[in-house]
Image (cartoon, rainbow, N blue to C red; front, side):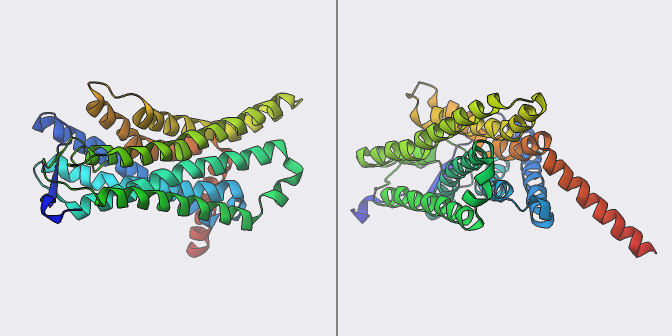
Length: 316
């Protein structure tokens, strides 16, 4: 790469093209969603750590998802809130690439974790007698490590391919954070290799996992329909419906963003879709799991009971 060409040392994130008053409204809304994301996922993590009845493979993967959601939001939301208060404040080139890297790590990892969670539900419902044998702790930890390692490796590949490109102007990124496609639009070079790798990554990390999830749930649905009692069917489906909601939101927005053909308003549409990643998905995940999951509710009740008995003991 010719170093004389690379004259851009920082970028301006254009963010949301709305009035200053609307910036304050968005700041308040996004701050509340971010707070809810941290609290909701934090409570789920705490419950899973403190309640021994939740020390199962399903909740181990749920704890990993909560970590990813907290990390996801923390990668993009502070920058968004800063830009809403001070729209002209630039972000350094190194800071921008770092943000892109971490966002991609958590995005890829979440795709793979959702597959692991669907596999866990498949084994639990379709092979219940062999569940403890198949989903041993060593297997669960290995699957989580593979998810994080693959997510980090693919993100590194994207970042290396960005760093080989010259950026000689303009500096304005039409987004509220340093999203991969928006950053690439500013490069002064042919992007065929970057676009090819993005396409391959989408197939491997989005389409492939989504198909695996669909296959798992096809088998799960078949197994549920064979259950004789209505109560048994309801219980089996309730353990999977929350995961299906999360999968639909996450993969749906990912496929539309990276695999749908570009349109005239694709820039503004992308911003709206990425709000799902930055705000709505991380905030909705704990809400979906806590509302649809009796064991999470039970864990919360047990924790409250422990605290109550502890306070009574202290008073005596």
